[in-house]
Image (cartoon, rainbow, N blue to C red; front, top):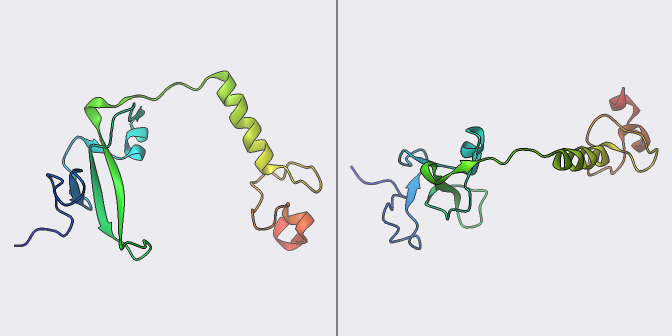
Amino acid sequence: MSRPRHWDPDGARHGGTPTYPWRMAPAGYFTRRQLRAKGLRPGGQDVAAQIMWRSRRSKTGARVAYLYRLDRAKPVRPMTPAKAAALAKANRARRTCPTCRRDAGYVLPAHLGTCLTCAGHTALAA
């Protein structure tokens, strides 16, 4: 049985970074999203390994997801009142139509730049 295409646990072919195929990473290594789901963050640690897989979307023909060690991860910093206020202000700006100055109740479509009512899509706005 031959090894998978992206199997390089010692990092000899991929710049010193241990590389594993899709769904074959060793235990204890997680992506940023997986760490966040556990209430953790990388906490300044360097990339410990990577996962590579073939993809037609990429110009190079392969995509990469970086992995971090769970034992070096730190807890996510708590949301402060100032951060919460800034986030609410940014989200409110994404929902406010520049033409009629109303809160549309949804994030405005970037391709229109206005709410559906101002863009003339009355059938969709109802």
